[in-house]
Length: 78
Image 1 (cartoon, rainbow, N blue to C red):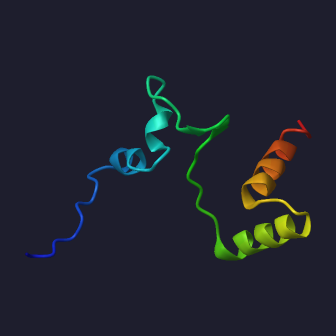
Image 2 (image 1 turned 45 degrees about the vertical axis):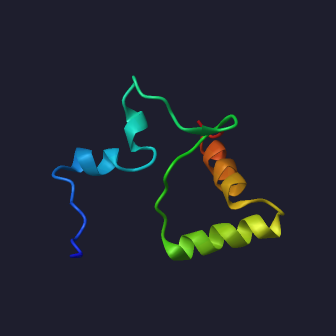
């Protein structure tokens, strides 16, 4: 059996649609959820992630809770 490289998406839209939450951008599609939370894909710098993890650990929070907390605080100043 020959090993073949994976097929690359032809366009940026196809690439984005391939992400777990990429297909939810269309209004007719359902957003994937876990309980009452939406499941998303997030890319973040390794050093920044380490800081998030350390901040969360110091407060007894999960990574997801820390990120949700930080994002919600963005909207408090508006």
